[in-house]
Length: 198
Picture 1 (tube, rainbow, N blue to C red):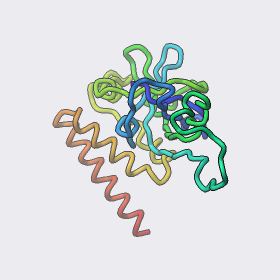
Picture 2 (cartoon, one colour):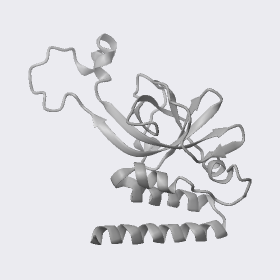
Picture 3 (cartoon, helix red, strand yellow):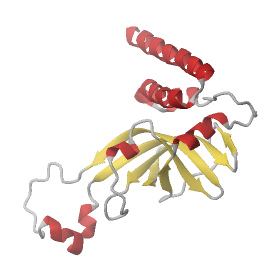
Picture 4 (cartoon, rainbow, N blue to C red):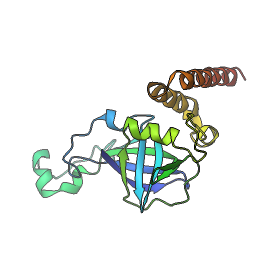
């Protein structure tokens, strides 16, 4: 499902996207469509760049503006001033984790730069599973090569983001991989506890 468009970047792997509003899509998007930890894909040429939502910001230029306004009623703004409705919105931060080319997935820093207005789409459970099991080494084991990448680039949200990812992957994994994910969850909890004590 199309949920947003790329607007700017903080770095080669950290992008902002603006969630589509009612003037840009006929689909009634809900906050559940762009939640924390949601895997997304951005099509660039023949490849899908894969990322995960790790932060959000509300845009509200009207906040604190108590001056008088000469404007039409809110219902008529859609007709006479459609850009007025676009002043408020939601920005989501996307951390890029890899890419998919054909049937092959790779968890690494994407080589491509995402163009402005690139479309951001949610990934289905099957696509998320393929990204984590379709690695270049040909093994059938669950792969999370982006662990250190998330720890480096997700800042204060790193532990929570990895925990949210583990929750999603547990639903898609077999019993052996669920045991590996449980070890990862305990490691995250331990590191977070030790970090708070220091």
